[in-house]
Length: 336
Image 1 (cartoon, rainbow, N blue to C red):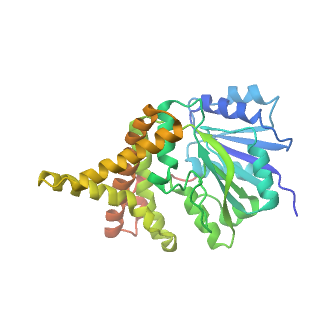
Image 2 (image 1 turned 45 degrees about the horizontal axis):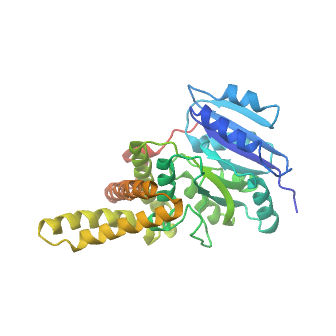
Image 3 (image 1 turned 30 degrees about the vertical axis):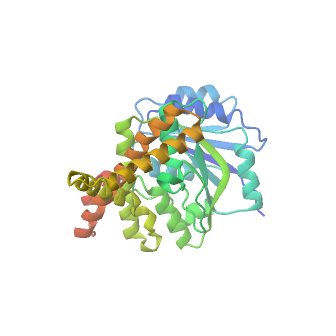
């Protein structure tokens, strides 16, 4: 069996502080396995060059600057230049636990796949708001647990905040497309169609910081909602009913409000019960009443933002599915 030589691929856009935290976590990894770190500056005006230089004595880092073409194209750029034969893609706002590399290598040695996805969690150093966002993005109550590692299936769709892909799979698939977000499930589906196996490595965990404001978080999940109907259109066999849940929730909320105006409050009571369930679950997980309360807000944003985006995109594609990049230009980047 060919030895797996690892190259980490990290696109960055104006995040030198995040890069510093991520590289500090690299320097504390417990594994003795050698690896390369490839950082791609994606048109940043506030770059990470100085931060990278400070770590070059400790870590094997390659640093490249290019014009802004989006994270997907930047990952492709990095993988073309990387020296390894297995790439691990991370977001710059991640922090690695000490056993990250050990867990990766154990999985690749014992359960090799050409593309894997890890999971994410909140770190004790995160703010209460960041922990609430993390709960909303990983909880079974809001996402089915897809991102938090609770949802397993045969053809898992890894997410690029913590994702591995072999050089062979990258070469044959040509890597990420120019859609964003959504470039990672698109790649995963195409890899499956090419005969490559994808899998969840549930113990390969990163701490995902997600430094976004409430408005930024809504915009992020709204775009997630916009791209899913596009992926369903491109890859009809990938469709699952769970993707409809946020849109159903939006319509249920509207109908509940209408019914309450007519004097029927039963549906609103169900919504309140769901909010209480989120509060109790998050409070238990995070051991904090404040985070439990914040999780009601972030979960509401997550579900409504995604649901509105999904509904809007579905309507647009129903009337015009032949010129997707023209009718939904906000979720596409221009490639180099």
